Image (cartoon, rainbow, N blue to C red; front, top):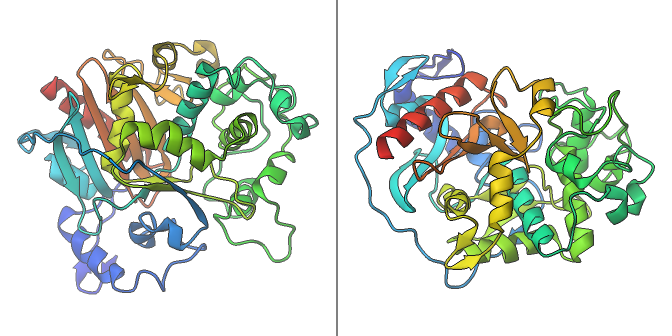
Amino acid sequence: MRLGNIDFFVDWGWHETIIQPRIAKIFMATERENTGLHNWRAHPQSQWAFQNVNELIPTAAIATCNDATSLETELQNLESLEFDSPKGKVSLESLAHCSYSDSIVILHKGKVVYQWFASHSVQTRPHIIFSISKSLTAIIAGVLEDQGVIDSDREVAHYLPNAKQGVYGNCRLRELLDMTVSLNLEENYTDPESEYQRYRESTGWNPSDPDALSLDLEAFLYTLSKGAHDHGEVFAYRSPNTDLLGLVLERSSGKSLPQLYSELLWKPLGMQADGYVTVDRKGLARAAGGICIPALDLTRVGQLFLDHGQAFGKQLVSERWIYDTCFNGSQSAWDRGNFKARMPNGKYRNMWYQSGDADKTICARGIHGQLLYINAKRSVVIARLSSHPDPLNDVTTDTMMASFQVIARELG
């Protein structure tokens, strides 16, 4: 394809590194008027939209503390490292360019050792992290369980009586957290006629169909039906599970999700920037995918795991929860699910992925290339934010994960 006098090559979702800045500049000149709910997740509009979600969708602020702290920086030269990619051997900067990355930040032993930002990215501007939001929401659940506010072995209906007649009535919070709810809904990001698009309409992410009844998020969740098998048997990744968990956290604590994110994560971790989260027409936060945060602040969440749940000498979430997230979970449920081919030795616990590799790394993932990689053995955390055109981009994601392993071994 040609854009003006620029050749644009697409191969396995990768593009030539030299042209990305010029394409970004051409688009950014008219970004706002060309972007709306109908195309904000499409490339190249996404390069602007993913850092300006609050101009497109209603949001609620996640406040940080007044005395936010900077991370210590000790930059290292990682450009000599080479990585395998669909284009052959590439440097870290080339890898970032040709994988549609927007920003990459690497911590080693709590210090920033590498930062890279695309020409269209603003370092301090919150970027949507999509399903990494699930992993952050799960930390809130862990804190509230430590406090005795919720119990993961309780049924959802104990906290949400209105859910009693639907799919969630007889499932436990544990099944929400581990994605083992038997839910009759496909996670289909691209089919405009799918039930998943009605789900996105209810969150405010898609334009409403003028010829159909459009529900708010909570009302939509109560319409969902049960799948063929029993809860707890099969890992089945379904985003509505986390939105339902978000409702449980709000009703059980008496606080909104933005308040909980602020009080239990942003302020205790000393985030440098306020974040925000998308909300539906009634103000309910999108716990499954709506959080927006800069890459530098996202690495602090990863460092929380390396520090055994502590920050600035205070225990934010228990060591018990950290250990449970990193090592427990149902292997049989994972093996019955459809992610086993990608991560044969993996598991899913508390909305975090266990890789099953030699280093026992864990990670959080979001569509369009969002990654938070945590390697406790090597004391390495890597946050990568992206505006990849393909929501799933498996080849690119696997390449990035393999490259992060190389970086961790080099640093560790």
